[in-house]
Each structure stands twice: as C-alpha cells, then as structure tokens.
Length: 191
Ligand SMILES: [Fe+2]
Ligand SMILES: [Fe+2]
Image (cartoon, rainbow, N blue to C red; front, side, top):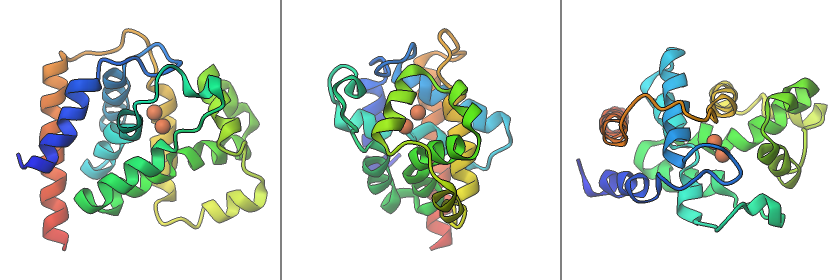
C-alpha cells in the first residue's frame, strides 16, 4: 500500500478508539458500521469507501470533547472531501462533502426524520443551518452525487449503535486497507 493510503489508515489506527463526540460509539466503530451498512445494501466499492471515511474530518480536526455543546461546527465534511478528492476522486469525496447537507435535506423533506437523529446530531443540525426549505431541497436534488449522499446519510444515522462491532480492530482496518487499494486502482484506470 502506498504512503498516502498508509497515512489515512494511520489516522484510524491512532485515533479510531476515540469516542465519537456526543455518541455511544468509537470513531472506528461508527466508520465500520457505516461501511458495513453500505456493503449490506449492495453499494459499489466507491460508496462503501465513502461510507467508511465520511467522518475522517473529525479525526483530522481533533477538537476536544463535544464541539456541538460549545456551539462549534468543525466543518468536517469539507475537510474530509478536500483531503480525499485528489486520492479517490469525486465518487468518494462528493458524497462525503454532501453528507451534512443530506441531513438538512432529509429533515427538510420529512420532519419525522429528525426522530432518527441522536441528540448530538440534532444539535449539529442547528449549527449547520437547520432543515432545508423547499427551494434548497430542490437545488440539492440537482447535485450529481445527490442519491449517494442521501444513502450515505441514512447509513450514517443508523451507524451509532453501541456494541455493534463484529470485527477486531485489526480485521476492520485490514478491510479498510483493501477497500482503499481497490478504489484507488479503479480511480487510476478511469483517468
Ligand atoms: Fe459526519
Ligand atoms: Fe458520521
């Protein structure tokens, strides 16, 4: 595996056992659960990888405690997308960039979707601009990666289950490494 992919993997090796701020899962368990839900749903390798890596920006920002309680939005979706775009291309980076907007879209389209959100996610929703209005929802639907972003978001909101982690951390990271190599190879052949 090349040095760039190794550096990404190291972020999870070093910070994966950190608790996901405000939630009952670690960063690694949340990433694993989201990736597993994508895999079970038949997502292609790029979207599986986006699901795995969608919160990598949280690991990069390393803000202490629970930022939403201090009224902070760490803009993790932008950080992650910026990092991953040159490595894996838009099929991975774009659903990640849009996954916060997708929450605003889902609650805007269906108020009851908010019941699926954890208290931390509801706090961050307000910091991120609140539910989208009808005009913003229609605009969001024109995004080329709209469908993938919404799918990723639904898995994201289901991937905060305490105690659901069927792999050892080593096996989970091994799976992530293989997925990164596979998607990077696909990305290179498309250029
Ligand atoms: Fe996120
Ligand atoms: Fe997440």
